[in-house]
Image 1 (cartoon, rainbow, N blue to C red):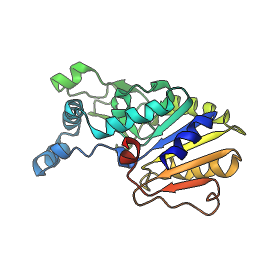
Image 2 (cartoon, rainbow, N blue to C red; image 1 turned 120 degrees about the horizontal axis):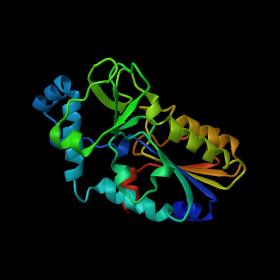
Image 3 (tube, helix red, strand yellow; image 1 turned 120 degrees about the vertical axis):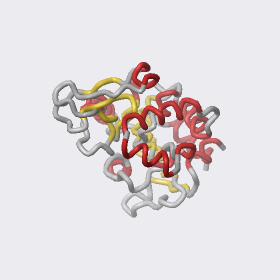
Length: 238
């Protein structure tokens, strides 16, 4: 199966990749009642803790999977959509201009009430000094610009989403290889369902869906798609 994926990528004019929940950091080292309580009471400060936790993770298997994926894609015209909010992909060799994270990241803050459309980049000083940032307009505490925020500010990703949309328009009637890696049903409208639609309408598209349990295909695309019942990280690392 690995050879089929490699061959499909080599033959493709463009490669579209969807990265889902299977790649999301679980923060195992921060789990426990004490941290959960801390996260409830101090979500901003707990977020800084998570950023530092991610930085200390060395030789992580997910990073290895990203490196293997990069080696497959580095010479191709690719674009990546990820629902992961841990920002791990941004520390890999991938070109950031070819990535969009519509569920948000730890790289930006927003007003927790979204009283304005402003977003604020997270700085090193904020992290190391555990700065309590408030909205300059309403003075409510800032939160990380992620879909888990009650009033999510989509301006954090929309400019890059427009870049993706323009790239996608160029795939019409082109040899397109789609890799769907670990995408479940948490946010199906972001990757899973749109990818199925792309495969249906692009006669030259071929998709590989890799997931441990949700690898099934709809009958409308089963002649143009391949399901792989495997952990996508293990699949890439092998």
